[in-house]
Image (cartoon, rainbow, N blue to C red; front, top):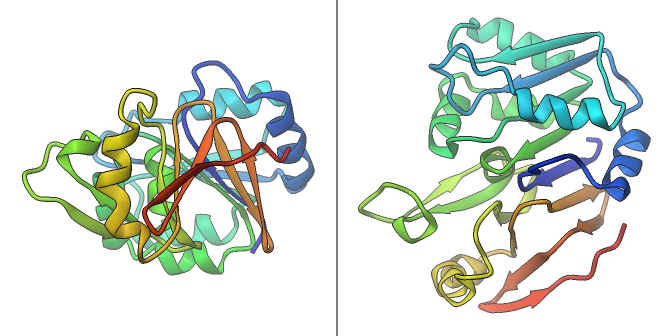
Amino acid sequence: MKSRYYLGWFNHFFPENLVKVLQEDITDRKSLVMISSNPSLYDEIGSAERSWLDQAGITFEEYHVINYCVQKEEAKTLIQHASVIFLLGGNPLNQNEFLVDYELSDVIKRSGAVVMGASAGAFNMSAKWLCSEKLGFNVETSSVYEGIGLDRFSILSHFDLENNMSMVQNELSPLSEEMDVYVSNKDCAVRVKGDKVDIVGNVFLLSHSTMQKLDETL
């Protein structure tokens, strides 16, 4: 498997250091396949996420959005032939349900494509993620969801850390005893290539209930 990018949310565009490695990693630019986080809304086309790539000078011959309008087998075929798979931001619960319904996790794992996820998409790329009211979800009971599991860690991406650091640490500590949790706000990225993890922006690592800020590596 090629590089994986766990992104926060970018209010403008990718920073230059992120653009540089994306251009190096994304050499095959035939097909961008985007997986909706609101798959029942057929007008979601990943405009923001596409604009980030466009601004970085990364364009593709074909663009596809997978949602409930696309048949299951066609969705799998599109993923199998994708140059880049981009799990869109939005609603991680809806996206998680869609990945299960369409049995896409194993297809994505077997793909040779670069895989990217923004916010909700980053959640679902990871091994597990916590859904709780304190983390902004409209739920009464906290639950841990299984993601695709491209890497064995958890992500909390695109969350207001500055005003909630202690709460986030307390809320995610039980999960951090099982696996590392990368925590970031907007304009951040965690890039995994082989055994190397690279950091862009303000990213923290919560491991065994201890939080530490990570140095940028790109």
